[in-house]
Length: 180
Image (tube, rainbow, N blue to C red; front, side):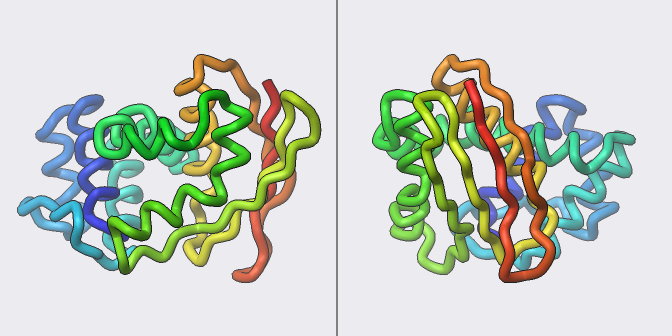
């Protein structure tokens, strides 16, 4: 993953738990304290180690950490670094979710080595979306749940996100139902 992901984890943890906690997390994860370069790709293992260390250091379950990070990614990192791209995604929750499959096409222009997930989206009605999430990276279901709640919050919409099906093999997908 690119360094911007690890920097966002650092920002979220530092804001919520303090910089000393972040330093302990870096040591626990073996990530050092030199920081991360936003536009530089890092091994996924570093990001997974950071999330694991956050869980160990804070006592929070990984599902809670990943969901909180998904929200943070949209509401803080997304707004700060990708405001124009978020605005181009649509003017409503429905529009944004229906355009989600195209979002990473634009991001790949910024991060050429990005290995993005794939989203397939189907409208089941004016306030109901079925979403399939394909990724080569395992264990990010709760991150996607947080992203979806963050996107709903971005549009001042109260939504529910239900995980319909979990990925069972590398070629499979997670499936979600988003209602509002």
